[in-house]
Length: 324
Image (cartoon, rainbow, N blue to C red; front, side, top):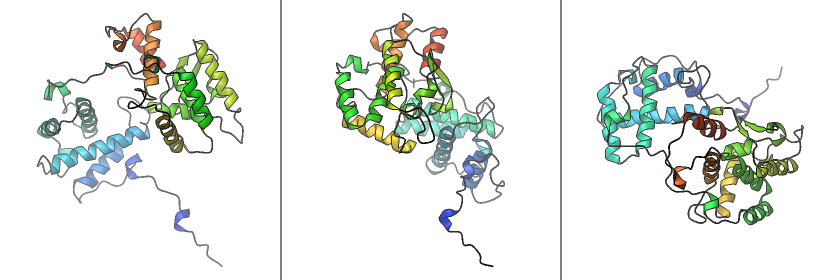
């Protein structure tokens, strides 16, 4: 009987242990890295205080930050900690002092501390990591933008720009229009299906959103209706030959994201050229949404005082951001 030989590249790819909830058996030797990897493998998929799984991007970020922090602790702070479970308050203090000496941004320090706090809960030490103000009260995280970078404030002829962009790459031009009309992120523009996600009074988004969070965005302006009609004319209804996305169906998600950024750069949608980026479209949408509630955004001279109701409506629902 002839034995079939399986080529190496035909074997199924095994996911990294970091992203498996079961993980490998607990290591008893081999230094801190296998032990840290084991703890991460057991817990990294968990959402904080919720049921369900964290997104792969969140898992990747947690993993990278934890290995970097413990690497700094051992190699730059002189703490030869062999088991990550033995982390102590003094270790956190030394890390913060190191980050301050390096000039690390306050927002990065806060993010690192948040992930270390999650790790300490995993190893049975909740509350070990204090808020950033405990370690460095002089540092403040700036949340509010100070300069209005939206296209409307930069005297850009958007119609002419989109026409030229469409002649070069119609898929990216449609994504750009969608981002402008609904304040969508780049990945969200790649994953939007106009024939499926248009629900009449609102659009719904879940694919490509940050953390996979579902949200709806109201259809209120004539420009939004115009864009949705243009998108439906651009994309055929979903069938076995076409997935229904507005991005190029012949490219992967990563390729479409890179293509989008390339076209933005080619047409001057950068801080260096026009003074705004594609992400500035979200800022313009957010500012315009606030003004519908009678509130002027900080970058347009407002006070920055916003009620919880508006925070939920504009930040969480329309923009898919968690209120600070």
